[in-house]
Image (cartoon, rainbow, N blue to C red; front, side):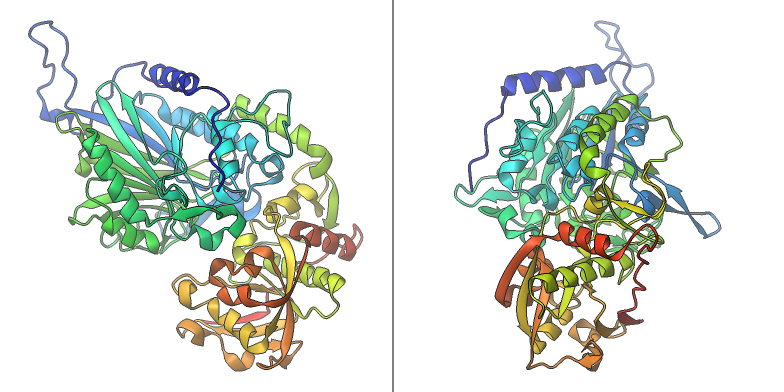
Length: 604
């Protein structure tokens, strides 16, 4: 792996700016901690007659995760959250957009001079056109304006490789695209933490493993990691030369390092998460007991991280939760996630004990808050969005197709996923008429298409910017040959092996149908006799030509069999395939209808 590039400006300048920001944030009196009543009120230093500081100091931790470059309010279901009502019903609330996120965070900080803003990774990558077209420089600029203090890396920070991640941290113009404005890109004001991401040659973290926030006599350490399985969910090129270590082992290692430095209050920023039993952001996942309402990888991780770590800010699953999961000593510890796309932020109160230098765990409070769009927009964010939209407009405003209704990306099988698979099958047949079917990974379908006009394009018009938001990865469409037995095994890998606990259901082209029986377990969930192509049962001995994107063709998302195809043909960009399909199959007078999403029969 290439060495991480040096900052384009001195560390001294960066430290000076950081120091200025922390000093500016320190204005005002310290808030009284949740447990401050333990000391006599009005105690004074006898020698000087000055008030003594409270033993306990409340520190506000504001956090969010998985922004994915969503500077503008996300559209459709991606821009809404579900709220549980007192009577057990739910309602949806429009949420997200950095103009509103900035206002909410700035309001939340008022009256909290001891305030930190942290993030749980995937700030960039899989981004809409306004950010992705410019290699996510606009998002880094927005995060700087949000006064983000620190973030862990996520898997998507590696979409363009470690060298590009280093540029986002340190600044400088893009090596091939150059500078987008007359000012050189300055990079992130905040540190990206990558404690468990090592350079294979040196064995050292490619970025800082931890960072310490200090204000007067209060100091809190942050350790940042991403999921160990990042190589399984990112293209091979993006993680070339890197090694990803176990999350628990890494956090416990650096917790000891921080303790040796006298830092006893520690927060872990972990780009890995869980799934709560409810999709409502305000669901109580501690009912009936601590952490009972959440499942997934974060549960075991939380249960094994050293008790010296006081709170976990997580992400990756795009779920919303505020849970207490017992640490190895059996004590409750706060574990949070703020959904995705800037729709929520988490406000956590960490009560710092000046006598011990640690967090009083029993006093920790936390809640998720909706980034509503009913507040005033932050003018500086409006200006930033306008600047980058002006640059993106010549590309983004071009009409590429027409739809008759919303094409959502939700559900086991989604209309948007089906539409992409149909587009890739059509493109595959343009390369090789013998192409039989196409499969699309659900994680690559980043958004749906909405019928209502987003700008001046008109209802039902699909713009290039909207298409880019759906498929932002710049994968290629690849063709490979598989036997029928291998094809069936691919379908079984959706619900077995590494995908057994959290199935990844591939989106099929219209000519592939089968039954998914969720009452069974593992590979048996695929009903063998039901797998048909063009209405005929798949022959295990026959050869089938399959179109997928390059991520799946490399065995990504646990589909190892897809990495074993033969007679490979690498085609062009997957977004270009979608554009060509929409252009050829829709018009203003004859818009394309959303696929019915009935190719997979689900038994529950």
